[in-house]
Image (cartoon, rainbow, N blue to C red; front, top):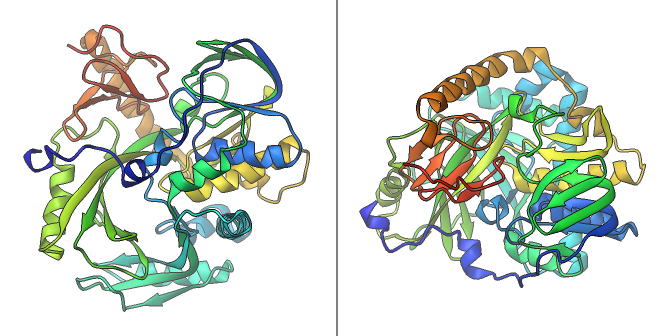
Length: 453
């Protein structure tokens, strides 16, 4: 980590945009709708509900867009890796087409909103390209599947990348933007309380560390739901980390690139910088470090004259069937809603979630409701990953029993040291803590007071 000693682990967006702070909740409140979480999903949901004339309060434990939104690479795309040929096999062509259309529609809604509101957020329409350095068969199947679902996708052997690829799939009509500049604009007229952590929710009442909020409808937009029962989301998804470098003096590309091979890299330009991403691993599942060094080594090889200007990492929730959970939180709470499991496509999925949840609360029919329904369980797509997650969680709980001072306060799993981020990470459900025990990422709600020893 020596070469990164003077580079603060902060995203490029965080260094460029400052969103004015809001005060915490000062008294008990009543409202029609309460949104927990002021990341992109929560902000967009509150924004669209307010446009429908609804009274909305947003509660944020930290700062507006201060969680995963500030760490995104901010691609707005229906190109989600190697997914469409698999979806057709597992859930059928109709539902696979709903997934494709929901995400492509999200790209169009972003463009319309940014144009109408004249939001200065470096929004750019450009292709998103999925590439492989190893094979072409799966790419050709993916291109054919995506095209049959109505997306503008085609196989190609040509890219701008400075290394040879075997093949690629080019998705047209995709986009990228500056997420904090966008979040700053849409949050301006919203009623948001920062530094207000939701501690528990019972019925219509949210208990926070600054008082109670009573609401007819409650939206959980906290990245990972902190309520374990009902819903049982801790059994149905896990979290993964990935890392990014912002490079100056590197090439400027006209497209976004995402590698499908194991250990592959992603590329996209952001103004004068090139964002190089990769080194993904399950949260709490990698202890040897070297994630940033691997990216730096690749950067030096591809762009000898480049300079590392910023470094940061992101965390993503991954459901067992790779489809987000969006909609009614559980069968037992008709007025609770959830948005989680966005995998690496948080900006696009946030728009899908905001429109779907807004429609549900406003009793407007939405064609995507059944596809993203959180209460679903797809046996063919889910059993293998479910058993794998149960095995990892069981091992984590056993580790927590032997190392009590390293237990995660969420459910008692034993945390592991992450040398990439100098943090203690939970391999069971993805909570993360600073070396002194301060909470970084949920589902844990509180810092580990005694720290880690």
